[in-house]
Image 1 (cartoon, rainbow, N blue to C red):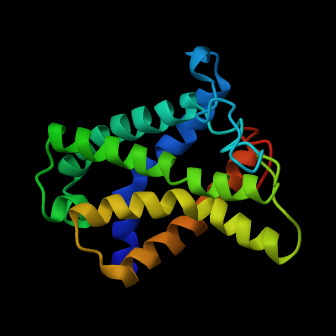
Image 2: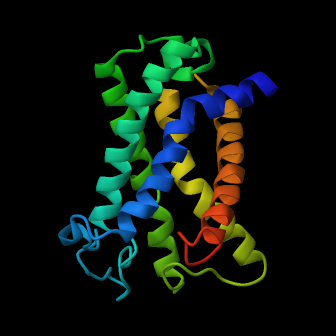
Length: 196
């Protein structure tokens, strides 16, 4: 079990690094013209925003860009350190720059696109962007906020390595727990407004 969890981390280290880099990217003034909501400010048929102001093209571009860059760099390091046997993507595919560009891009898309259904659901429930509810609903949405992107990333891993449903769900649980820990660290570092 410890080896499997280690493999999960070795495989998704680029995603963790990309998440941190994207926080700084979104706070920067670089390409500020892309800081436009993905939903274009439009409302759904219920009169509420589709995703809200927090889901921007700048964030999506950042996730894809940084996941791709870090996946390529991590591929070089995995080759040098002989860690390819601990990397789910490399169990059935060669560690090459073209493959890593593809995998990194798909991870970035999986991460950012799988956040959108959660935002859509929260807008339907009238939850303000960046906020959660109270009581059990808060616990549920704190977990969902951390797990949504991991559902997408683990699905991308599954596209290249047959995880099976149990390993996929374990990936989501471990990823969500890691996401919660990193959000706490980013909050204390001043890169996040809210811990959850």
